[in-house]
Image (cartoon, rainbow, N blue to C red):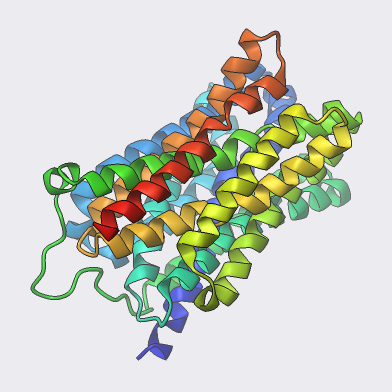
Length: 393
């Protein structure tokens, strides 16, 4: 029975690589787009906000339609839209009178695909028969990290060898991955998330549960803890060590992603021997220490090491919270997973925003911004304690 679902789980792993591609490929081209299409940098950077804004909207709207059209149709649609957006990015900026409008349309299409993947992939893996669902969930989320690191590394090498002006070839190559995985999801078995005869919890039922609100706050803090340092890691590397943007990307975000993926892979391999709650508590404590290291240590090299350690510490937060939610609310269904994905995305955008706002208010002091961000792992730690008390009650 379990072997039947091995291909499903593998396709879900690839699904998170697809999400990493749609989130991380275009930002590597921002400066090139600015020069080639003569678009102001303020407009270019709006593409990131727009991408995550569309994904947030999809997280919210998916509650209403995923159960109606089914997980298989939704999964295939998510992959087709991801591939279409990447391909249209190579066509629309030059086909339309406004290159920026062409980019926005392409980003919107792949962002819908990315948002759907975020809502769908975790519950599909959670529904698959497995001896240890926490292990499978952690392993699944590690693939987003490997995808992120792979996109940065492979794209950097491609641009160095073939020239960044040939980026369209690489965009089409990246689009082949979601196209292939769409065919996989048309065939693999998909287990029902809720047992036959049972109904998933509705929004009103979820909103009445204190446990759900604790989990939602934990999810916001997990996303914020992860991105508040990750988004600024390249800047730390460039400013602190005086290295180029390319080297900064490799030393900063890629090191962060690899260590975050390693933490998830470690739990994915040995999770049956490790108590999830304890692992999450230790990770939160390490995250708090790494934030303090980034903010307070006086040596740039040590700040960068603290950034990397932060990647290691946040690895279990997102998948661990999903696993906690699935165990605490087994009838949560699509609505719960969609709202948790929404909470995680709010954290991913809110964490870096808080760091940036505090930094700006204190004369562009990035270290003080990161120090303010320590509130997120502290709140997550409090949430784990509250959740343990609720379940013990």
